[in-house]
Length: 509
Image (cartoon, rainbow, N blue to C red; front, side):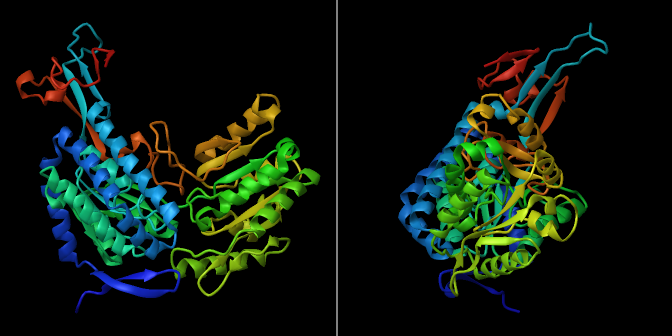
C-alpha cells in the first residue's frame, strides 16, 4: 500500500496547499535513526558542535523571509510574531554554542586518592557524556522555537546527541525547509546529514519512540499524546528518559489589596496575556482567582472591556478550533458559570476570545466543576471569584502541576508587608516558575530560566528552555584508578582543554 501523503494546510481556509512529503514507513524511520546513530562520532568535537550551532543560526537568519512566509501560511500566527520567534530560536542556538564552548556542562570532578579517608578514596574522575540519538516531537504552537530547530533539538545537539525530529502535521512544509537549512549548516562544518533526521506521520512517531537506538525523547504537546509516548518509552525492553511538556493551567491569584490598588491594570494585563497568539501559549493564564466585592468587580469590568475589543483569530488547525468551541460551550453550561464575554466560534474558520466566571467555592471539591480545572487551548480563561483566603487555599490544593503560577500583589504586599510571602509559599509546590506582578506568557531564553513543572506540566523535573536544558541528554560516568594516558582529555590533571572543574574539592575556572 502506498504511503499516505503529507499535505500542507492553510488554517485560514482549511484547504490543502501542497503535498510536501509522505508519511515515513517503519523502514524509513529505522534508516533515519541509524543514520543519526552513525553521526555520533562526528559530533564528538565540541568546537565543531559550537560552530555548527552558530552556523545554523546564521543560515536560518539568511532564510528568514522564506521561512516566515512558509510558517505564516501553515500557522496563521502572523509575520511579526513569527519573525520574533525565529530571532528567539537563533539566539537559543547561539546560547547553546556558548555553553558548549565554556564546557561547564560536562561537570568535570576529579578526586585524587586519599588513604586517610574512611573509607579510603581511590582516584575518581567524573564527567558527563551524551546519551545517544534523541527523538524530538515538534509542537504545533511554536513552529520555530519548539519544532525542528527548537530548544529540544538545540540542546540535544549541544550535548553531542544526533536528533531525529517527528514533524508536526500543522507545519510540514516549514519543517522540511528548516531541516534543509540545518543540514546545509551541518555539511558546512563537515557533519553528515544524518545528524538531523526528519520523519512525518503518526505511526512514524510511534515507531520512533520504540526504536532500540533511540536513547531519549523530548515532547511538547497534549496530555493525551504525551502520556501515551511517555508510557511507551517506559514500556520498552530498555526504558528511556522521556522529557514531555503536556499541559498547564497556569493559575493566577489576585489578592484583594492588589485588586483594590490596580484593578484596571490587572484586568487589561490579563486580557493581553490570555489572548496573546489567540490563546495558544502553553503558559496562558487559564485560571484566575479574583476577590468578590467591588475591587474584584472593577477587575472583571476592565477584563470585559479589553477582551471585547479583541478581534476573532484563527487557531492552528480546524481540529483545535472544533475542540475549543466544544470545550468552552461545555464549560459555559455548568450551573453558576457566567460568560461576561462569550468565547466560541468567530466565523467558519476563526474563534472569538472570551472568559467565564464561577464562584471559587464550586472548584473547591471534586465534582462536575472539575472541567474548569483542565486546560482549554485557545483564547479563554476562567475567573473564579473567592470570598476569603480559605477558598483560595482550597482551590489551589486541588490543582495539578503547572508550568507557571502567578501572584498579583499590592505594593505593600510586594514589599513584604501582608500575605505576599505566604502566597508565594502556597504557589511554589504547584509550578516550575512563580511570577510576581507579571504575566506568564513569554519565556525568556536565559541561564536561570526553568520551563517545566510538576506533572502533568512535564514528565520530569528538567527544563526545556535555558542553559540547563542540555542536562536532559547527558549521563555521568566515573573512571576509577584509570591511568592518565588512557583518560579522556577532559579528565587529565593538566586540564589541556582548560575546562572549569572541581579538582580535589576546589572549584577551578
